[in-house]
Image (tube, rainbow, N blue to C red; front, side):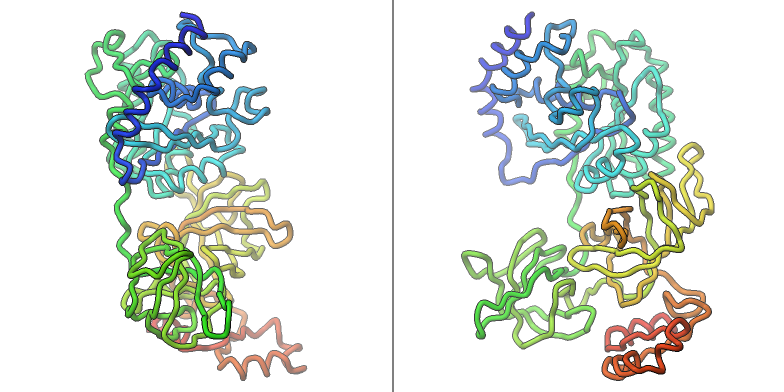
Length: 496
């Protein structure tokens, strides 16, 4: 079959495609998935084949593939499926994936959004970006080479990002003559890795993305020893992440004052729900108020849930600024001056203990000291003590803040438990991380260096002291913190 004949056959099924898409439940959120794994394991080819076989390739895309004669056809006379994903010129020239490519497709049972992530180690940050919103990971392994260090890195990052459903796609099985023993060995090795990461929901599938075996259509004729589902069968039955059990979370992005009679706080609900009359607390100040009104661009609403972009109006004047958080009064995030976290280093300079960074989470940005504690050995799976984290290292760290910080554990809330670190000298993003828990200091109070004196003072008095000439002489030996009700409660709790 020629490329043009294959394209003509695909176009003739447009009516069936539209019917399948209409049949998909439009009220349900699409299942979000990523493909990940090492270089040249066939991620782009797999998604391209998936799009082709589910009739999700648009006419103009199909015709463009037919015109692109720079790439050889496969033995079925079909075009290079990877070109459906690799849109950058550098990707096409080098035959690699650099950026994350998102594609939509649907079957008659559900709809999907798939992210094709790069396998090269230098683009690990892009893989982490794709994993941050995914419900499921399709981890590809070349049947000839098996599980590599980059395979382990991607599996670990996906787990850190909260993914608990994995499909192990043992690709290019045709190149090893459909060897069942080789497939079983790779599947067993990955299950051991997954269990060490706390993952138990694993489906291992032998497949050939190029030939389309066990992608959408069963490959049982070539692999009679495999009687399991195809990739599409698994995706259709996969579950989405359950709603995270936290209270209302509303990071304030902007204060709206169109006139003297209106003051609203704008942002996107990051967790839980809210309705008029609910009692809320503004953090970090600790001010309590009630919700008076919930406004969107075209109407007044009776409630808002996670993901809604709203303007929140409170029943009394409150000092609220960008970066503050409005939360339910009976389920607040953790407040403290130090937190434990896991992170991935994303720059060649790595993460150093002697450098201060900006930490950005939601709309809040704070100065932070980062103390690396351990680093994951991807070959052995062991966490080894380390006081620095080089490029692409996965490690545990302690975050110490100058001002009160507020987070939820990442497992509880992705939005308020994730962060990035920014180099203040270059403004480059140097790491992405996930909060684990609030830390306890050996000195009793978080984030205070042993050779410094800590003074917690009312705001007015602290400002007067710091503006005095006497303070300049002792600046390096004294830590001043402006005390408010929320901070006082946090410090007392740490001392308890």
